[in-house]
Image 1 (cartoon, rainbow, N blue to C red):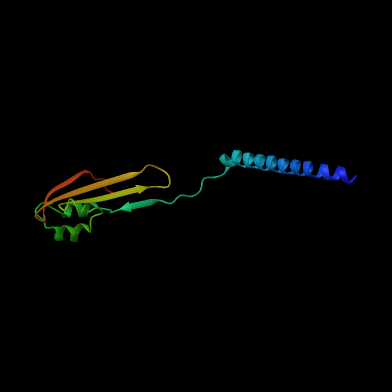
Image 2 (cartoon, rainbow, N blue to C red):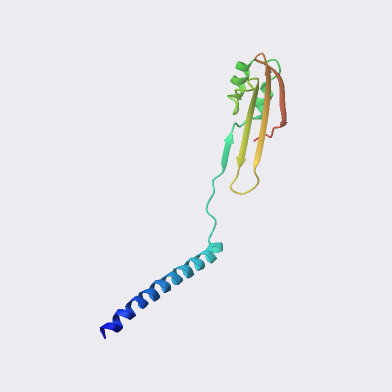
Length: 125
């Protein structure tokens, strides 16, 4: 009798481990199959960059100094140290639902005086 129990016990332990592993895999498969039924998590609206209003854009004109432009527009989002004569005002809005909106306004300077306003990709926020 003792011999039988000593031989049966390791086999019984293997069966229990295998069945618990199979049960766990079945549960994981069942839960992942139900994932499409779950509601989507709430996403927040994401705003990045400078919001440049139309009044601000109309307040700057060619011939202004960097100091005057900064006073009217605020600091640029991107002031590249390798292109110190170019300021980029970048704006990006990603809503919870809907389409992404982007806006880009680039100002060019020469000797700290505004010489060109590139508003070809500007969209009022």
